[in-house]
Length: 398
Image 1 (tube, rainbow, N blue to C red):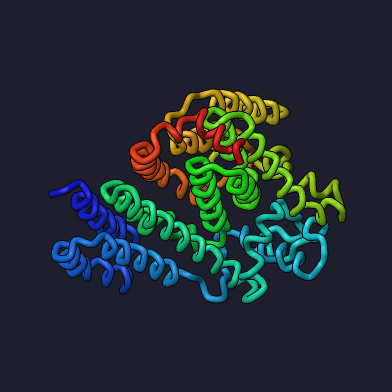
Image 2 (tube, rainbow, N blue to C red; image 1 turned 90 degrees about the vertical axis):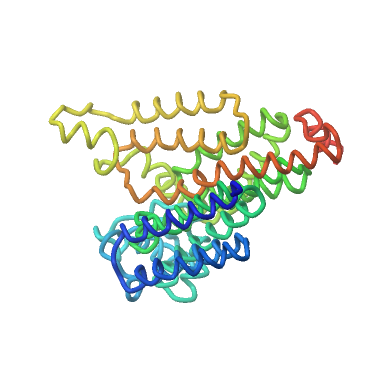
């Protein structure tokens, strides 16, 4: 039995046990009941696409069966705020100078970035709140497609079990349709990382400029993803030279600025407050962070927790940027570790942020496998053309 076959069988085992552990419904029973048919089909034909179709199809149907009527859910008001923000933007008004009526606490203000509004604009324009909710399902489908593509291009032994985890893990399934917005942003982050990784593998000025712009639209959609982008830029610096990193960074910064200019022009103060307020100036202590744990234990909190948040995050960021990663996937995990430090030292956090980082974290080993395979053929065909110095020379030759 090959490693790819072992990976396929392991993916089916994960799908069966994880799905049955989640909840019992007509769909989950049917999903597991047809597994022997899928197993036999794969054994006879040996095509990993059979496993992929089973996992991705089941994962999407499971999400749609938990889709709340009208796109409304009482679990979280995050997507309601995004929906109302995007509708305000589409109406030509400033979403940062708008008091929200659809949130749990009415009359609050938006803390989301312009790329977040643009990400949800198509669905919002078509179907309103339901369209914003369906954007999350579309994001999950994009993640599944990328993970499947990486599995086929690299290693089914690693990729198919990873795909099974994303498709079937109850918590990830639930967070797609519970009223949060991180599934779509997590998909965007994965897309941005793949574009950047491919640009570093086959560099050119155009690819790097487009990759920088993609970083602004994808990682720029949520503030907690920014540290990951910074660490990936530091990795690009070490791997391909400072000019490459500067090209990526300038392209990304200019793109984010251009997207944000209309909102800055409307009210620069409110825009600045929205960009950093959710991370740095929240007065409410809630969620998975050290301050909630300290408060629950009865220990007195410091008068100002901001220095701890900023200090811990900057230290973690400095360490992560100077680590010599062996691969792009390792650098992505280093960036996620910095984001985790930021999350646990911020006053307001949520377990709903899991789908923001889960796709990239799960894809990291497959990204490494893809890089090894790509480099193998590149080295065989063109010698040392993909060494860091030659990469930088190739960029500047263009």
